[in-house]
Image (cartoon, rainbow, N blue to C red; front, top):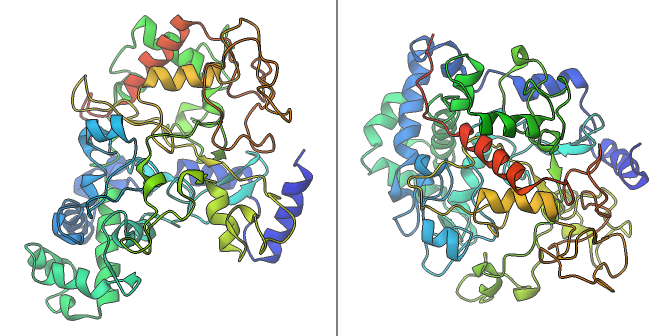
Length: 481
């Protein structure tokens, strides 16, 4: 059953001209399309030369540190291959959890999502899908970019990232000038024509975005070259611990959803999905849904202190320490002319009628452990509050538990923490609404309880972590043909 508030919201979606639902066939086509990584599927040599040239241009632009204001930050500064296409500074990940920007003293409010395999994410805006029981689609943690080409514009403009602004607007002319007089000018003209850099700045910017997105769609960024991929192809064998983790993640003995039941199911694939039939691939390890899993606040997030409207008029945080990230609710309601979260005087009086506040995209598990060294610290969750895969799995397993065995925190109660005998194992969720929180009453694992009280042992948590490490690219070189 679809909650009444969501059902009402879907009618509003239709009236607003949005696609309210996707058929099962459409979902399969979206999630398992091979178009974005065509170079990986059919071989780099079979990609048209014009497309290869655009990919090559996109590669050098992706690493171009001159495109920020002030210079010094590129796309790769936040999306580093060595860190699984996420933020490459271990100390910043550990201390802050979110990326710093081109302007000293500025930082984003959210951690860096991976760009690898993002080409497979269904295009936005996010729409509700009855089959999944969730909103689906769009890039970034809240889906506010339609696709990879659209996505390129946002970090270029964001004052807390690459900061290319003039008079409060994206300064396309300055970006075009940087390419025109930079070391990539000849490569650009080779792709778009000898006079292309004399075109209107917005057109040049569109071509920059196209080439960067072409690179991000390429097999170099999404190579399907992990140990898991080698295992699927029969080119590698998982260890006993890794295989046990795969079985827990999928709930099946053969490692595919819907296969012969394993003795225990950690329910990971309910959001981090792969198809039940290997022939339906690729295995993306996400269904691009949005969920509120009760992630705590990140107390070290520097965005809480970015309250100076004079030094950062377009990127400051007016709420200060009271800031609450509403995720999809921060984007979807404003896109319909309503305030963030549909909260406040200008709301329509229906509250969170889509049940989306506090929900964030389930990113791919691919490269979730990719790191340049064993001691490198990665930041996990939308706000970077967790620092290891073990912490992540333990959080999913025990969010609703306390230090007293058998005691369960019930977030459907007005005061979930009243009369607890033990100490909660985790801080309070940043957005604890029982309307959006997954498994709010913390009842033991069931078909609907994807987090909070999974009943995993410490050994089983370690098995899941061991399996997740097999999803790191670079284990082998896939056959290009």
